[in-house]
Image (cartoon, rainbow, N blue to C red; front, side, top):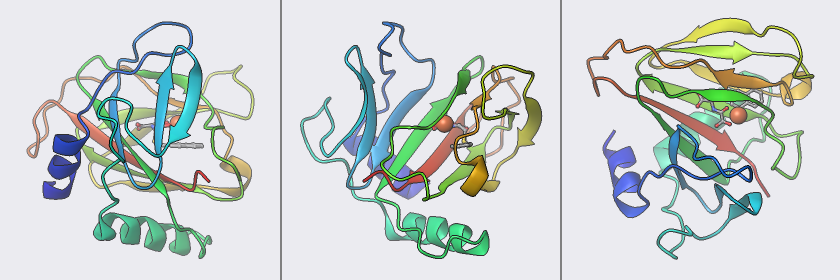
Length: 180
Ligand code: MD3
Ligand code: FE
C-alpha cells in the first residue's frame, strides 16, 4: 500500500477518455517504463505521463517480483513486466467487455492482482458474443492470463458496495504487462 500511495502521488489517478469520447468509470494510473493511456486518438503505451509530462513512476521491485513469481508458477518463467496499470474502482464502477490487444507480443501473459473490495469478474470467450462466466475476485487474488486465454474478452461487473477493512469502499487492481 505505501508503494501504491507513492505511485498515485507522482502520477495521479484519472478517468481517461476513450476514442468514442466517453470518460472511463475506472480511474487509472501506471508504473513502470511504459504506461497505458487512452484519449480521443486511441489507446497506446507511452513512456511519459501525459498529465504531468514526466516518466511514469518506476515499478517497485516487490511488485515486479510478485508478478514474475506468479507467472513462473503458472508456466511462464520468462515474464519480465515493463508496464503495470493501476485500476481504481468505486461502488458502481464497471469495465465493459474488452480484449487487451495493445501489447506487442501476445505470447507474454498478463498478471492481475486484486486488492480491497471484491468484484465480479466477467470471463468471456474469444468473441464478444455470449454470456460470460461470473467469477468472484477477492482481496489478494492473483490471476495469470496466458497462452490460449490471453485474448479472451473480459470485464468487471458494476461494483457492489461491500467495504473492505483496508481501504473501505474501493477496489484496486494491478495488471502487469510486457508491452514492448
Ligand atoms: C483476461 N482489468 O486492466 S483484471 C485491464 O479487474 C482489466 O481491473 C480488470 O481488464 C480489473 O485491462 C480485470 C484481469 C484480467 C486482465 C487482463 C486480461 C484478465 C484478462 C487479459 C486477457 C484475458
Ligand atoms: Fe483488460
